[in-house]
Image (cartoon, rainbow, N blue to C red; front, side, top):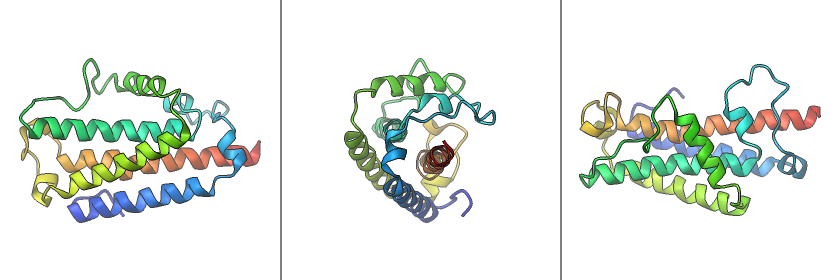
Length: 180
């Protein structure tokens, strides 16, 4: 399925990828769960996140925190409280630093808590998406606070697309564990 352009596609792709992610997690061996992520020998994996996340908890917390960005941004702006998507002082050039702060903030969060938190925030983001019409989600300029994009694109990015990202990383880790 291509990137969602309707509410139905958005919900379906988010739920489908979330289910696939959870099935992948459930299939992980004890060795895969207990071995720290290490992608340092793969020269293709240059982006900062390949070094940042060291385990499943880190990935789930990353998903949770990005869900929170959408939930808080939409909630505030719908109440008339103007708020940017990325919290200050971050912007689209520095959001990598924000991701590191999320990572630091949760180094004492347990895997069990991370699973509960990301599960609940997934449900919350789906419920929120369901409150909007196709037009509200996928037409530009419906909400001035969204900027030049569509509201739906933020939901897609923080659900289906982010779940794809998480699965790629987990599969790369599984491959490392088998080859290691």
